[in-house]
Length: 339
Image (cartoon, rainbow, N blue to C red):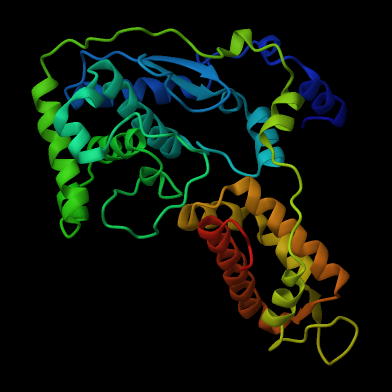
């Protein structure tokens, strides 16, 4: 078990001094499995370079795939869960999911597909501004669903990468999955035609220059998390009323009534990890923001002495989940938790 002293030292250690590599870790067999997947898909001519960095990504016009450094060691993964609240690549299947997406970027850059007229017609211009904060249209049938948060809607380059990832996924019948979605299905059909045409062609771009390689990152693990975790948000006072409303039909104040009454704050804290993942998947509200929201609601619930009958726990879980999801949807589409 990691001691508090070890955890403190880990946080203050420069990332480049952690000695992290893909080789000899749980990532190595997953990368080998993915390479075999590419061979079976007829993509042997494009050979991506895999390396560790601060996040998933492919530097523009390279064939180098960056994998988050915290996936290389169990203690770093656990720290990421604690600091960020969500791991992009929590198990083998999820890591493969992200690798398929990033490979879409590799193929795009390797063959400069974004310059092709048909590619632009299907996905849009790659010169479109790339914005981290985007407002997806949930359940749109114009885009495939692969990574959480309706990620294909973020930018034409991501739309292609998500489409490619769905096409590449083994044992997935994309025609059956997206047959009733004409636009998304057309993109997938285009992807398949294109991949067959490129099967015997060498890529025109083979640059594998790395961006923020793990062995060159001078700042510490603590500094990394200080930069990526958002600062506390000023939440609108109306959230107190929302909290009271959802507990109206339950015993909503502690200290009275018959039977066991449990604190709503404890329920919110217990549900935090599930809410982070699921709210992101279905709304696109980033987990780090949801975490701040849930913790704020827990603090207010404690201050307001909100509670619920133990016998009504299922109803309380549904109420809390509905509230957090509704607030997240408001923020994604309006930029504010309350109108």
